[in-house]
Length: 525
Image (cartoon, rainbow, N blue to C red):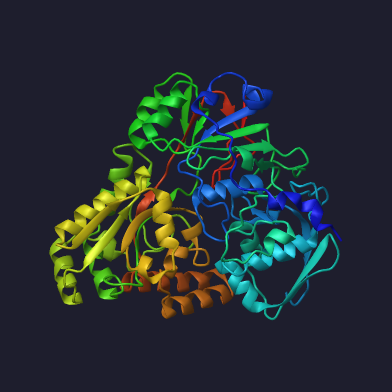
């Protein structure tokens, strides 16, 4: 049994005094003598606020998690779960007993080996929040560590989504002591077993974050394939530079002050493409799922008829044009409750969005819903795509005669308000526009926006049936029913699918096609 004293890293403060300044993005050797060739200067699309995706999901937080942590299974480009930290598994003929074995060489960033007990604690915490995990927990008889390298999950009934859940969502393996943190409390210590180690002493919120290559990480000896295969770290140091102004980020890329801008502003893409030494490439295969998220827990959008009354007026083409302009091939309309191109996208009920837009009909339905001019607080963050959708939404609401309070704010403030369960805070917002990474809304199990702020028992029943459905055909039928219910009692309104390319310095290569930006396999030269 390990000594708690050896986990001294658990007591380190999250914030340090060191500041990474703009000057450190120059071509000169990086901090600590690491060469520019071995340093990656990266501009994420937003500030790093959430570092614990079990506690709360954010795209930038997931990029951080995939750098610093690993998973038992990882999805390949066909969305099939492949062994990652696991060497493999055995399953009994009745499909009730799953035995997992860890591969050799797994070591946490504090130098201690990854044990089965760490996996059991991490899975148990994940299973309290993630939909795939919650359903697994309801079917589980017990989960135990047999020895340091093997653990077992025993089920009461077969669960066909088990491996997908472990590999597709937020089940990252943490040290046991960290994994025992309450699932509704954020983990602040970032000790993991991924290819990069977070450097808390160099983290300055809103400014910079630094990661260093974890030399003890042993990648799988397979080609990288989305979240599966060998996660090769080719940089000794990765510097995140939070540059919230997209024009500033693009200028820094053009001047070779940074290497990679995760989300360049669409308006600047033509200029970047014309800049010597800069490339623009579309890598993400699933894009972003743009939605108007509605707070159905408080007035006025606790009124399902009012929410549905908005649908005839919503023009997805307007929202997508506001984001991508006239750039071809970077957006798609006709989007329903599931990601276009996924097995569960369908035409069920889509006439309400695909038919001619009818403001007069929407106004009549709003009047029939009983709306009496109550204030609608539309939160608009600084993230360009979200802001663009919010401005289109605001204009539509004004045309419909709704009483709109358009509130601009940074993404951190919006996230905090949206996550809060304080009744006073919840009552202070009505809606906001956001883009989900396309993998999550691609299926009912991880389509979190479909849940609504306040749960809909009818939707919950359909989701439960989907988890237990025997085959893909039955699952698709249930997804169609969910979409029809989603149009009748909308938890959100679909605004379209858009794709954001990477912009980076020429000479970089190895970008991994994945719904969440992957830092492994990328190199210079």
